[in-house]
Amino acid sequence: MTTTAHPEKAPETAAWPALDDRHAAAGRALLDWAAAADGERPRLCLVRGGRTSGKSHLLAWFLAGAGADRRTTVHATVPAAGLIADSVAWELGRQLGYGPLPPHRLLDRVAADARPLLLLLPDLHLAGRGSADHAPADPGTLVDELLVPLLGLPHVRAVAETGTTALLDDTDPHVIDLGEAPWPDAAPPPAASEAAPDADAAALLAAVPRTADGRARWDEAPPAAREHVLDAVLGTEDGGTAAGSLLADPGFLLHGSATAITAALRDPATVAPAGLRAIWDRAAPHLSGSADGDLARAAVLHAAALATSATLTEYLRPLAERHLWTAVWAHHDVPAAAHCHLPQRDGSLLVADALGRLHRHDAGTGERTGVVPTPAGLRPFGLAAADPEAVLLFDGSGPLFPLTPDEEGPAGTVLGHIAAHHGTAALGSAPSRPTALGADGRSTTAVVGDAGGAVHVWPLTAYRPLPHSHRLHDVPVTAVTCLRLPDDDLTLVFSAALDGSIRLWETSGEPMAGPVERRPALVTALAAADTPAGPLLAAAWNDAELHLWHLTSGTVRTLPLLYRCNALTLSPTGRLTLSGPDGLHTLQLALDRLWN
View 1 (spheres, one colour):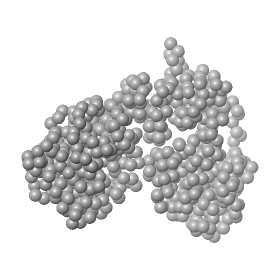
View 2 (view 1 turned 120 degrees about the vertical axis):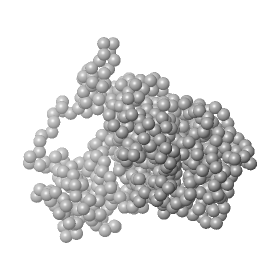
View 3 (view 1 turned 45 degrees about the horizontal axis):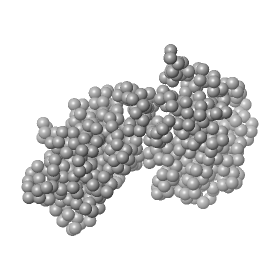
View 4 (view 1 turned 90 degrees about the vertical axis):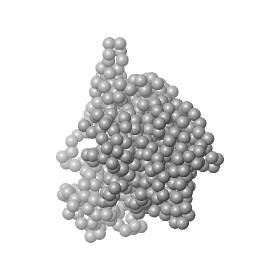
């Protein structure tokens, strides 16, 4: 449905840049559509027009002033040229605060998110990548797999640039058509020979420098070759097999176009080395966004390849070890609900699997070293070890349980009392139900978070009748940890809650007035340690980010989370161990370089 502009309904335009006379009417029409009351106009607006008609200029103008009015605020903008549905979903998820999600999970998150959303998709008609006979190469695939389902949600609107195509015509959209005529000062289109995507595969391959023994030097290749050679190869007669040669080259995986590789691996006809598709599925969401350099990309690929491809792992290791963090080991076959370090056992982890069973693992290798008998029916979602044989368990349903061979011994008495105290409190008051359990790295102190937003600090090495408690949040706590600094006689308690905040309390005084951090995401795990670089706090978020806080300076580093994380432990040497549904993994932080 094509409608005319109603300038009197448009928002105040003072915040927008000046728009030339040729496009003023289109600008007013776009503002009028964006400001219309719910139900007055279609929830999809198409911006059409020929090449150089000013479509992109109009969308850039709209975006520049969109924040001036809540009705026109754009919540996510993804230029779709050359992207497939996965790549667009990853970027939409990042901008909407969910993290890089595949299309089906993004749809679920948006469906559960009640806030009205306005999405902007420039160059939708240029979307698609890969072999011409493969569905992801067609912009219609992105439309069918992602955009149409998004628009099926009543709180989602979108503005999409569709050129002169018929994309989305059958959805009865609002249409702003800029026509075929170019701007008077438009530059002529480039000659066909200058358009890199159409370049001959042989010419692009010939432009790549080689070593004396014939190996491609992708690190020295021209940008056009890195970006387009895979597309060009896929266009040849035996494209799937020829592309396999590129995908078998670790140098190309490190330096080639991540978007092109993603599209090629989505095609079943593309020949790929064993395990590469699984590796790329782990790495690609982060390579498309945050890995902005050879060392960062090497670290992400190396972490994704561990325990899957020894060849790729060893190729990438020298570069990865020069980055700010390096993956040390991975066990994808150990889905875990929680883990903790065992005190006085050099290099031991206690890991609870999804069925509630407890196993010991070597912290240096991740290998399983023993089994710990567990009461039937328990599903530990948090662990705090008082000594190698005495552990406090947090069941996901709320109760705490002591696990010790001697219930009458010192450790058994302390843990039993902590569990009984919180059990009695929960029976008397629902907000007192435990929701999180953590401990300091020395296993001297435990922290319990509850549904009322309070945290309760207990010594693990001595009996205390009552905990040292403080309410830090107004909503349930999702993660807790603490850090003992004996030299300063300080205990720092960190807690995260359902409002997306992390708070700090030094137990000899009042809590910090404001949050350490607040984001539109949830913290799933916390860990802290005193390291040679100073005290650090690690926080895993459910939008696939890991934040490292240097507490004395207040500076933060953001690392990508390749795997879902339920629990974290951080050693004084900078070993960060993560566990969750995707397994057990350890990273080594470069403490001497992280804050420089």
